Length: 422
Image 1 (cartoon, rainbow, N blue to C red):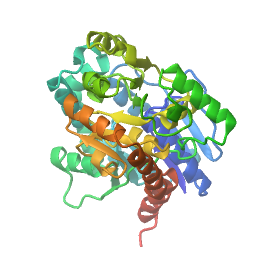
Image 2 (cartoon, rainbow, N blue to C red):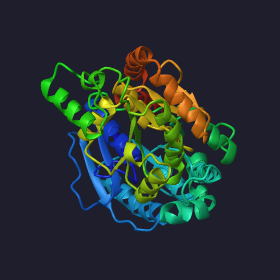
Image 3 (cartoon, rainbow, N blue to C red):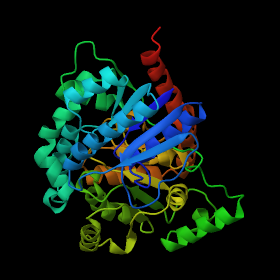
C-alpha cells in the first residue's frame, strides 16, 4: 500500500506526535509499504528512513492558526502526490491538521479513505488548563500557545468534528480520548472508531546494563551530577539514601510541575538525600526555580532543557522513579518510556494514565494533591525491593503491549479493512 501520513509534527520536531509518526512510518515501511509523510517545513534536516519520503509544506507561524494554514498546504501537496503516485490510504494526525468537512469529503471521494488518529482534543487541552489553574499552576497568559488554546479551542474543535464525522475510520490513542470525543464531538451513530495506544522505542528506552562499562560510567557520572550517588545508586540498585526523581515534559502549566515542587518539602523531610530533575522545554523554567527556592528545596531541584534521545534515555534508566503529575493527556508517552527503561512511575489517578499504570508497575496519587503525591513517592522509596520488581514488570508490560511493532501491525489491519473490506 501507499500510505500518506498528514502530520503537523515530524522530526526534527520530536514532539509526541512527531516521534510516533517517525517510528510508525518506519515500521510500516519495514512491513513492505510505501509511506509518504506530509509535514511542516523546518530549518533543520529531516532524518532519512528507507521506504519513507517526506514532503514539507509552508505554514503560518501563529498559535492554533498554523493548523489551518498547514492543513491547506498539506491538502494541495496530497493532491499533487496522488497524481504522481496513487495513494491507498490517507492517515491524518488530529488535531494538528485542520480540514473542513468539505475538504475531508473531497479527500475521501477523490483520493483515498481517511483514517484520522485522535491524539487528544482541543477541548480536552482547554479543560486540562482550567484544572491546572484551579490547582495553582502557572498563569495561562504567560504562554501564547496556552492562551490561544484557552481562547480558541471551541472554534478549532469544529475541524476535529469534521474529522470525526467524515473520516472512514478514527483511531483514538486511549479509551479516555475516545470517551472525550463521544462526550464533546457527537460522532455519528455508526462511528467506526478503534482504540490503539501508542508504543515506545524499546531499543532506545531500555534498562541499565551494568555489564556495559561505558554505560555504567555514564550512569555513575549522571548520579554524581545530581548529587544522588550513594553506594546502591552507583551500582545500579534501587537507592535507599539518595533517590533520584525524574519528571519529563514541557514546562507548561498542565504538566503539573508546580504541584510536584509543592510535594518536595514533604519528600525531603523523609528522604533528605532525594533529588529531583525536571527535563523539558518551555516558558516556566525560571518560575519553577524561583518556586523551588521559595519552598526551601532549591538545593534538591535541577531543571534541564531538551536533550538528545540518548541522553534522555540515560536519565530514564538512571533514575529511581519517574513522576508524571500531568493534568491532561491524550495518552502520555513519558510513563511508557519510563517503564521501558526499567523505572517505576508515580502518576495521577485519572485516565488515560490509569490505562497504563497501576500498583504493579508504580504508584498513583490524587490529581493536584501535593501531599498525596509525596505519600505515593515515599511509599515507593520505602520499598526498594518492590521497586525492583515493579521495574521488571514494567519492562515486560511495554514489550508485550506498547511497541511500535504492535502499532504498525494494528494500523496495517485498519488500513486493509478499508482498502480491501472482507
